[in-house]
Length: 540
Image (tube, rainbow, N blue to C red; front, top):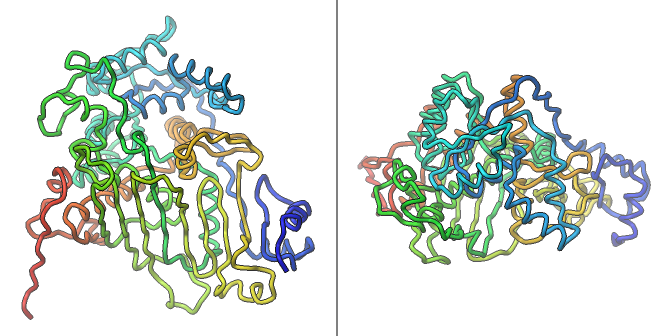
């Protein structure tokens, strides 16, 4: 008997649901409420609702923003501060398209108990833009010439770091050493050595440290963790997650500002620890295309997928990583690859099994990326008993060879090609997603999630959590432990691509297994792929 849309609607109508969670499939043989509830009870899945965050009371937290580029502006909006230019742009877009609720959502966003007191950016135009939009007669915002001036000014309690990757760790360490709270964008560090140094700084500081993986606030990901922990999927042996982009913005070819020159940009401060090269506007605005300032696909985009799966599976650092790829779609002078395939091996990982003890253990995490194709490939978690497709909503299909669901499959209550469970926290909310790029970010939990049917900016929730912990104590969802795991895993992928060989992790010693004659940080900071290091086999 086939499952029809009419059957589906009848099934949904008779099922008590919480928000937008529903029983969707099995078979039309499951025709009454009792049998439907039997399946739900066996699955024992409940949506993970947003955790309550204590009120951020008392005196306002004085926050400084370091880096006011694309991401810096976004983070300021999540803190409640939007530029005049953005407000006008969104107003016009809302007039042209009534379904565009971006400005409306921002204006409805809860106010956080902060003062934005300072901005630091090496490009005059950006700094002046922030001052023009945010500085008022009641709250004068100061521009700082350098991040050290801001941190040691005595005027800030916390800093938000949204700079090129090679500045993340130095700035965060400087702030932590002064007990200034830190919210830093991913990837957490630019080198292996920095990763350890930053961890030490966090451990020795009284400040609250958070990494900007806002997808940890996404309700579908929290629910996915509950699903995995309850054994709904059985033993998960393979994960496939992907990045597909096919436009200039997605390939990091951002616009170059017409007012950019040696008089408006502090080039030496931008370079910092990077090689001393002549002034280059391409490098300044499109820094993600070079290893000297950025971390390529492995640090910029793989980190999104790794961390959102790590928050679901708590898998930690892989035992080994193998990477391939190249510069195949944008031969424009960049030295980071634009096509990347990463295999992370977790041979000891297990979430339990529905089969005999010891039969199933181990998992491979596959990340596949191209900046030359925009086809949407979903994230898939493949288990012995079921498969999960995970985005801003999630769907579960039973596996035809499942041990756990064998009886239901045999009597027709489940069918492999029909989902048994879906969770869409925004089912009643029109998203008006305007582009494939927006869908990409939404499915990775990077744009919004839903609370009680209301769309909420996930970055706002993540920053609110950080501010609440500053005021009330507690633990951030993405702190130094999670950041350390993200950074080491990303560095392993970058090293593997550059060296053309497997990179291994010693979990007992918490170090990368050494390779004779190889300085890992020297490799990470090099311009591109290096000659493969020969493996010398000793005679037995």
